[in-house]
Amino acid sequence: MSGQGGRGGYDGRDSRGRERGAARLRGDRNRSSQAPSQRRRAADPARTAAFDVLRDVDASDAYANLVLPPLLRERRIEGRDAAFATELAYGTLRLRGRYDAILSRCSSRPLAETDPPVLDALRLGAHQLLGMRVPPHAAVSETVGLVRDRVGSGAGQFVNAVLRRVAERDLDAWLEELRVTAPDETAALAATQSHPAWIVRSLREALVGNGLTADDLPALLEADNTAPRVTLVARPGLADPDEVRSDAHGAAGRWAPTAVVLPGSDPAAVPGVTEGRVGVQDEGSQLVTLALAAADVDGAAGAGERWLDLCAGPGGKAALLGALALERGATVVANEVAPHRARLVERSVRAVRDAVTEVRTGDGREVGTLEPGAYDRVLLDAPCTGLGALRRRPESRWRRTPTDLQDLTALQRELLASALDAVRPGGLVAYVTCSPHLAETRVVVDDVLRRRDDVERVDAAEAVRRVAGEAIPLADRLDVQLWPHVHGTDAMHLTLLRRRAA
Image (cartoon, rainbow, N blue to C red; front, top):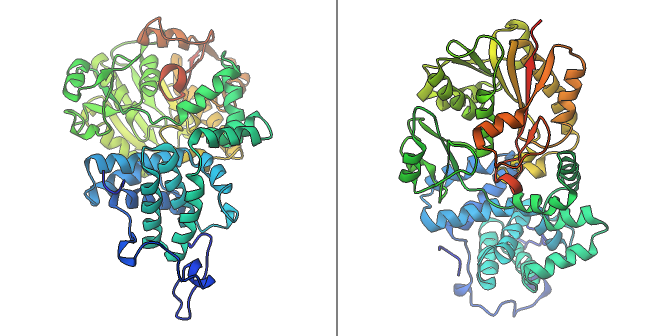
């Protein structure tokens, strides 16, 4: 593996404007036991790639899973080096809160006063020391080389000092210190499991509200911090799951008959992915989509049904619906408000365009008024906080705030009202979120139904069991909440609603 072997805490410059080391400012002529020719001045490509991803995430609000793969291709970083860069970038983002809590105890100044590039480098170093099998001397020297190359020699001195303090204890010792010094259990879990405190509280409430207990919380947080395996969907009628498993050397999913779990992280080489017969899709996402198709509508059904994916971007659920519709003689309209996401939908459904008759760009809140009662089944995968996919989008936990909920839940209510208007009497609406937050799930549904007398709840648990089998553990409720630590999926929520006939 290659290389495993701002200025942060310092701002000195010489008379020509060049950065000077802290030792030089002190007049210490014996500032290093290494000769200049022996000092590492630059980091290896894998670490540099991880650093650049963190900087892009911080400076441009980019998503790591969209930035890293093309960066690796562009720089021709492959094999073990690519795997190292991936774990380093994603692991650092997931565990940023834990590492910041530790770094704050090792730094001579507050982290808020540390230049962002230096802080990102410190986090990368901490992950190598505490979260990866990198020898301490390599983790420190390589990170110092990275900082000297990208920031300056003075910052390198600072990073060297901080990381050496981090390396004085192993992970278990640091976690114990974070636990015993925390003011309460929430703060302890926030620090040790690297989640903002408000998310810790929200997940505890969601667990209890969905039939589990607060004792599940540590396992859920730990699952959020575990990199998920890549899961493929073998789209029905287009790809056989057994053949996909054989081609990919993968394993069957736990619940969805369409799911194939890869042993590695590169789905592009699997036959069928390029053509769109096979796609990348979390098993929970597959389950809620399959459940909508499995549930019964009232009245005329079967061939000729019209289905709507109201918020279709980026298109995974629309493509699965399209494959199911092809088998059943139904058609699908995919609606997406953002033009760039509508283009992603176009690419996702390329193999099922005989069924997906239209990919349109429009405001989902208007569809119910423009096309009242026009559809037999409507999938509303509502925009949400994404708290159910923190293991896949590690940077999301640091971007979302409680204030986001007010705008999102208002939008969710409007979209659900539109979906219920767009479905015909006897038809079904699947309200889906990739968040277990009670405000985005049960509260939204309750508020919308309180204003209507033409809608009834359908047993979503029964629909999921039709797909997954009776063994799937579900709460004794009509709606369904999936969990990473229980089901091995993203924390998808599903409520099924039927429009009553007049």
